[in-house]
Length: 151
Image (cartoon, rainbow, N blue to C red; front, side, top):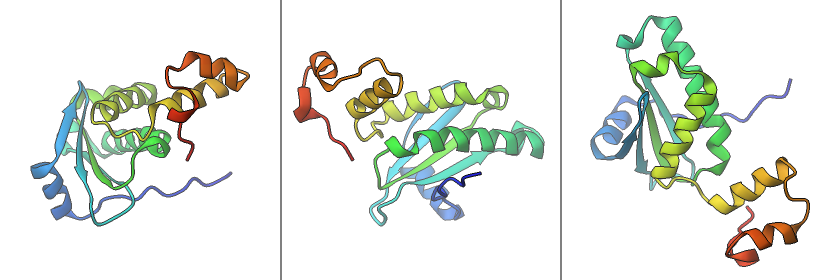
């Protein structure tokens, strides 16, 4: 089985405190996302926090794994150079991975953390085979070729 790339994580307690005190945050029913610009690094760091109030160790680790997997799927689309801390609320312990992924996507979008929306839409349409040619895609977009950036 192919191993996925390791996601850079936040481990120091003082860094979590710095993010909680200075960051911009958005919340939904089960997840709170804190975001702070990291001027020291080129990578985006992830910190996940699940309180002991959320359940025993099995429940907390399951919640952490689901959040990490949802983040891993969205990681390639994120801007670089941020510290992101995701805090799970009580409702998150009952969520399925698809719901967590949708919530994270919505919260990241509201924090303007995605690098390029049009590239992602184009990529999704190519994967789903809705558009076979570039011309059919260009007719759909208001910006045409000059707006799309391919990393």
